[in-house]
Structure formats: structure tokens, C-alpha cells
Amino acid sequence: MRRQRVLITGISRFWGYELAQRLEADPMVEQIVGIDVREPAHDLARTDFIRADLRHSLVGKLVRALGIDTVVHTNLIVDPRRTSARVAHETNVIGSMNLLAACSGVESPVRKLLVKSSTAIYGSEPDDPSVWTEDMTRRTPPQDAFSRDIVEVESYVRDFALRQPGATVTVLRFTNVLGPLLQTPFQAYFGLPAVPTVLGFDPRLQFLHEDDAVEALYRATVENHPGAYNVSGPGVVILSQAARILGRRCLPVIPPVGGNLAALALKRVGLLDWPPHLVRLIQYGRVVDVARLRERFGWEPRRSSCEVLHDYARGLRVDGAAAVVSDGESEVPGLGRPRLLEGVRRG
Image (cartoon, rainbow, N blue to C red; front, side, top):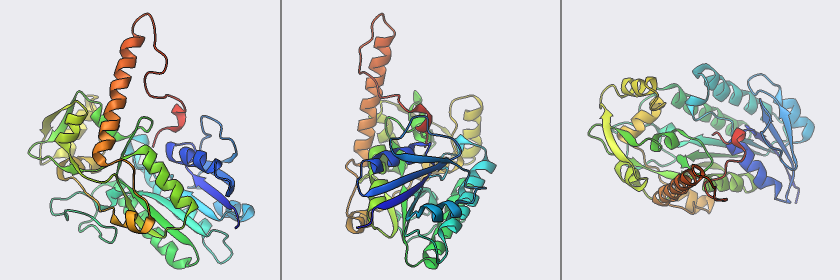
């Protein structure tokens, strides 16, 4: 069996870096090439880094010169806080278009494309279905730039699958990810002493542990699983329940109408930088079905949505204990969550 030659976009950030580490330990992976605009903060053992911007670079020449057969696109910006709206749009849409063009053509060596996407593609509206399956599409056009980007990118991926029938094309739609290393809007949200909520709403939510998310990426890279898959911890929690698990209380200060303006006010006073699509999420919620992941992909996350929160809560308590100890004259080694690779841990 021929060993894989893998190209990973977004290698300097959490997803690309963690996937590269997993692949380095796999003897069936012959070569790993990581692309990003900046170098990873810490070295990888056998991953070759190439500084390149997908918005401008000619990746096609690289793909063909190296005989890349597997491309993993983790470079979609799902956290709008990371950069400006213009850069996020260009990175998500223009970058993805350039990458797909580089993988296309009769002479392309690419036989597998994996795209890390988001369940935000379904939106959050008052008349949404109770549970979303992968075959469903949102009923109304996206109202925010990020959601529009995700919808557009996935449409390009579907077109690519039609143009390249010999390639295995996989899309993983992750729900809200939590863990000790990844920095996300929900991490900041649950880090507040009181959690701002929408007056009169207590939405259903789902969560995915960062370790399970990386495992899904790894399996989709080394195995063949064509199609789109919702990836979430099984089960559902409501927002008030999540807050209780994390030792927080809910503060219903966001009005049901004009929630984005209220979120903007919270940002201006330095309390919460909360993207517009997530304001609707904490109002109307979203639940996705993971039956296809279990039945066709042949795997499901180890932790349920509720267990993800309990695991995260334990990490917060350990961090709190470490902070108390370090404020004194002595410090207990090993307390607190790891702080390594700070430069690559953002989602």
C-alpha cells in the first residue's frame, strides 16, 4: 500500500499543528507539508513547513511537484475575533478557492480532500428544525459574514467533488469545541463570572472536546469517508445547565430583539467579544444529528456534550487551585493545564 503524502493548511494554528503531530506518529504517512503565513511556534519532528498565503500563492505547483495525494484544509477562520472581516473573508473564500483550484485537473495527484467546517452552516433561527441532519440546508440566507463564508466555501467543495469524481471529499462540521488548550469564543464566554444570556431564552446546545475533534480529523485523513459529517459530543445540554456545571450564573441582559447591539455594548466595555452568529446561537440554539458519523464514519466522540462541560469544569478548578498556590511563597508543580505552544493554540 502506498504511503500518504499530506498537505495541511493552517499548520501554525491548533488544528493543523495537532493533526500534524498525530500524523507524524503514523508510519503509513510518508510526508507531511504544512502551509501557513507564519511558522509554528514550536518545531514538528518530520513536518516540512512552507510559508505561503493561500490567498495569493500558487499552491498547485507545490501539490504537483511533491506528489501530494491528501490535502487537509484546516485554515478556515471560524473565530471572527482573530482578524478583520476583510481578511477573514479573503482567507476563507479566496484562499479556499485557490486551494481547490490547486487540487483540480486531470493531472492532479490529489486523491483525498478533507475540509474542517462548522455546524454554523445551519444557522440559528426561531423556525429551525429540532435536529439538523447533513442533508438539510438552512431556510434563510445567512445574516453574518462568517456564516456566508462557510456556506460559500462548502458550495465550492461540492463543485470540486463533482469535477474530481476520483477523489474522496470529506467535510467535517464541528460543533462548539471546548478543551484546555484551544481558545474559542465559548471559552471566553464561560470564563465570565456571570454568563450573559438572551432574556426569555434557554437554548439547546452541543459541545465537542478538542481531543475528539483532533481524532475525527486524523481518522478522516488516514481513512476514506466521503461526504459531510456532523461532529459533536452525543446528547444535548441547555445553556443554563452548562452554566451551572461550570459554576456560573446566567445573567439575562441581552434583549430578544437587537441582541447584536447589546453584544456590541458588552464588547465596548471590555466584557465580551462575541461574534454575531453566536448571539443567535445563545438565543435559538442548534442541535445536530450525529447518526451518520456513528454509522457511516464508524466512530463517535468519547465524551458526550455534558461530559465535555464537566471535563472543562474540572480543568477550571485545577487552574484556580494552581493560581492560589502560585500566589504564595511556594508553587506546587503539575497544577494547572499545560501552557505549551501558546503561539499555535488558537483555533
